[in-house]
Length: 303
Image (tube, rainbow, N blue to C red; front, top):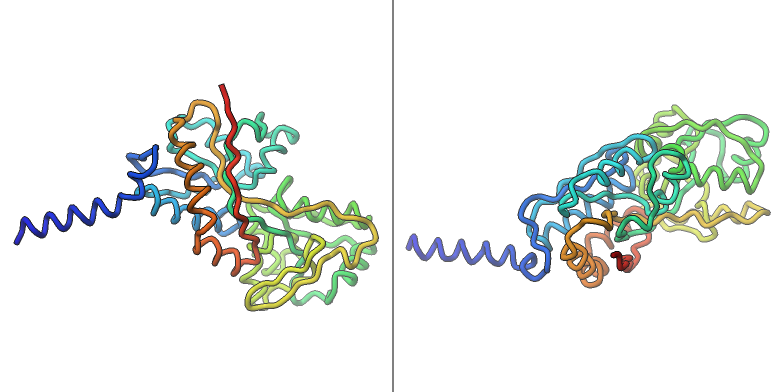
């Protein structure tokens, strides 16, 4: 009986690791994903969902570590400087890999990384419910006449790009209040530290459903449906000037140079076959007002 029990247990163990055995790269210890922003923000949320999918496929733990600072450049550089053995990755928005060098934070470009995207988010203009603004037109009119505080995740963040885009299209001004991530920026507005936030829909959705934020507009040209709340109109309905596209893709980054080729072969396969069919990611996108893309990886040949 005992030997039969041991055989059965061994069979279950083999079944549990079968997914990992199908891939060229088979990790032998836990993988670390550095989120270079605070806990609870858009990057942190979708990375934790993605980590669960990857654990099932690779048969290893995927540990998410928050390391915020300097608009995400601190954690991203930690991932860059880590040993190139395939066990340390970074999460975030690929567009940030094109801004760190411009801002003098970190000497890198997006071409230095292999990028695997999962979802796309759009910013929202939302206000504290106690403010008098019921429409985006009312808020913009007030911002032309007085200085109103806006919470974002810092220079170069999606929220910052959104309010700067609005400023460029309307001529309004604002007082920029920065935080170590999208979730702290949203919480600051919920708590009354600022009147407005322009962070991503996925970071605001729960507070909007709970009536703790009032969404006025999507920073884009299409309305957005948030499950449990309803439709939010596009800001373009209130603008005369065009607004740049401000949607933000999210995913994982891995330095191209020095990594095991089998790692990229494995992730290319997972992103082609598993990620596009993930119910976990699809459910996340629906609940958070995000767009679940069926995104390809961005493989490149490097010498």
